Image (cartoon, rainbow over all chains, first blue to last red; front, side, top):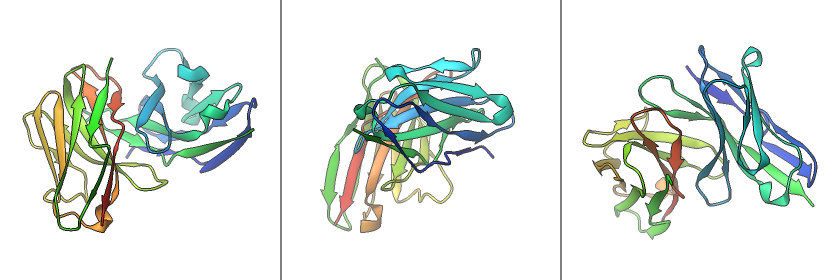
Length: 114
Length: 116
């Protein structure tokens, strides 16, 4: 069965510092991979997605993610974090069957120190 | 484009009453809509998949008679929480998928349900 692991429940970084949020997935074939951000009390906003092609994916708000098949990872990065980036981040993998379901990781809460 | 709305954004109801939550795709036709439940500080749990004109497909452990889903048109799906109880209090989020090719899901802003 497909699964997504986000090993870090919380991460705190200083404003201006770099960020990497980890995501590992379990799936036999090349999955569809997504990163979403959720601000408190809000729905989810898509940051970026990977379907195929270039393994380094650029997203909105200066985020990028790299698909590494050998490590079954899709880590999210940002070179310089802004205070407004404080939020909950979810990694998700898309089902490859006709259901089109998304399987979400448990999320990582990002706190930004001034 | 690809905007999904939910109504209401927040609802408080008494135990035993039923509550209907609407999910609309505003600028596209959604062949499939999904309903998620999110507990505080937790991830999203898929409750059911809703296809226009057919019965919803519920995930294991989700009570079909408790959470009624109707997908009457390509732009509207509704979730009705029947005979709500305090344990049904949660954040309910819908998403919609543009068809027919696979695309990402577009999420609504969520509905906060509080059952007293």
